[in-house]
Image (tube, rainbow, N blue to C red; front, side, top):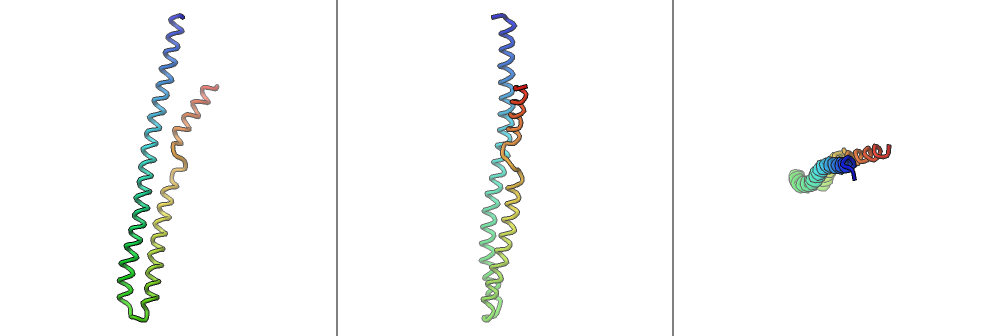
Length: 121
């Protein structure tokens, strides 16, 4: 083998390894972003559940005890509906957060597609 051919092979391998390293760094960055987003979604979901439960319990007790005996049932129903609506709004906000990024690792996949297209041309 000639020295020029061996050097070309080394350069090719070095280029492929450098390209792989760059793609792996991009993938690891996107993985961290996805894990952060998932953690926020889980914490947000748990917060919705906890706040809805606490709100229902304390609100219902306070309003039910503050109205007359004859109006306790309608007051109980009103308090329950209000806090369920509040929990629904919080759940919709959480859903919007989850839908902010359409596809995990989209940048990495796009870069790999561009690499493949460049290699084919």
